[in-house]
Image (tube, rainbow, N blue to C red; front, top):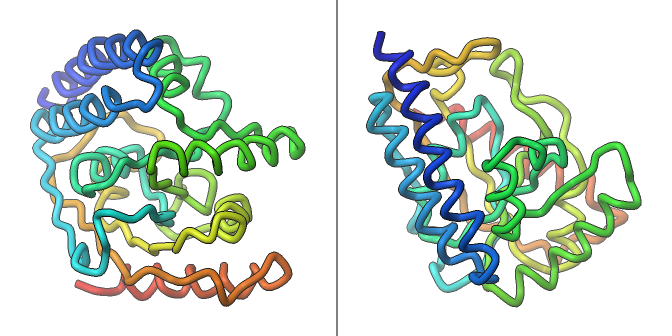
Length: 234
């Protein structure tokens, strides 16, 4: 019964906060209202669902800098774990299809997230180029799920290049992060959320100055290995 109540409350929570963020975005070009709304949205879901989040490694980061966080992607709960726990103004790589979701999509669009059209390579490149100016202007950090989609098995899939290109073109350090527990709390093909613990293990930032577009595969392997190492930690 709790799971069905949680689903209902998530819908109401999304409609109310999403509407406020979407309307505020007309005037709030920097997305400050979104920053507050995202944290309230995530905390409300966690409270309803009985989810606790434990985070390790924040001492590696400087709150006054921008980072490109790269994480494995276990379930929709990953965003709920991320939003209220990291003291940064974080934006996501978002699939273009999500923009079509009523209210939620408008809130995402108005909040300066990076919209990616996976079916159109040229459009995706332009989105990444445009994001460079937005990141610098509003002092944002970016969260990238290099797999591009949620895991169907709990194991990491192949990495896509977009986030690494953004890091190399901007010079912003990459921070590998491992999410643990969210797959079991919300497995694929169900909307019923189980109560429990999600862990975020944060690594030290990786300076991308030592890499180039031609050696991005080496960087990709390094980030993947680091996430796997973090995921193996208790």
